[in-house]
Length: 204
Image 1 (cartoon, one colour):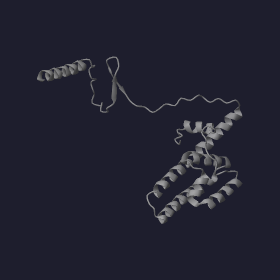
Image 2 (cartoon, one colour):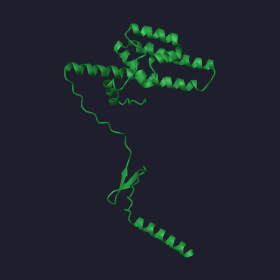
Image 3 (spheres, one colour):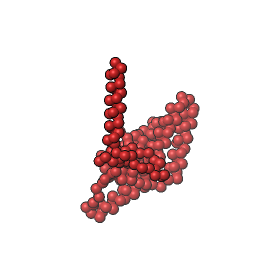
Image 4 (cartoon, helix red, strand yellow):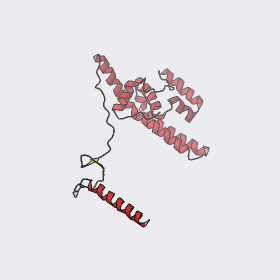
């Protein structure tokens, strides 16, 4: 048994030494080479490799008429103007959901909802009220894109069904529909504009 054990140790050491002899020499490091990276052996040479972000390759958009070009760039302007507000609404709603989950106290939950409502009202009074009808319509769609809920659903959850109905009726007067949803397949121009600006669609 001892003989077999010695043979196994010898074979292991010999195999390890042989494997090490087949490796290329390690590169010499300078004084500024302080970042560790993974490497692979290619053609008997160590090649460092680093994970990089995905690169998006898109076709150059062409337009049939000057009017098509004008309409697209007007849409692009409107989309990029309202998207930050949609992101804010989505983030604030998710934060409210997390806050509400931390307590079962109805009084504290009501206070949290009022705080959220005040922040959104302040934003409306300073920024959103000056938007055009077209920008308002796009914002309603993008709120659904960012939060997963329609604007009507958000109002209903925060303020109740009666208030949601009243807001919906008021929105209808100005040509809006708070129940409007966002479909990236149907809104391919808006989706392309957002993706090109780095606003990825992350909701299932």
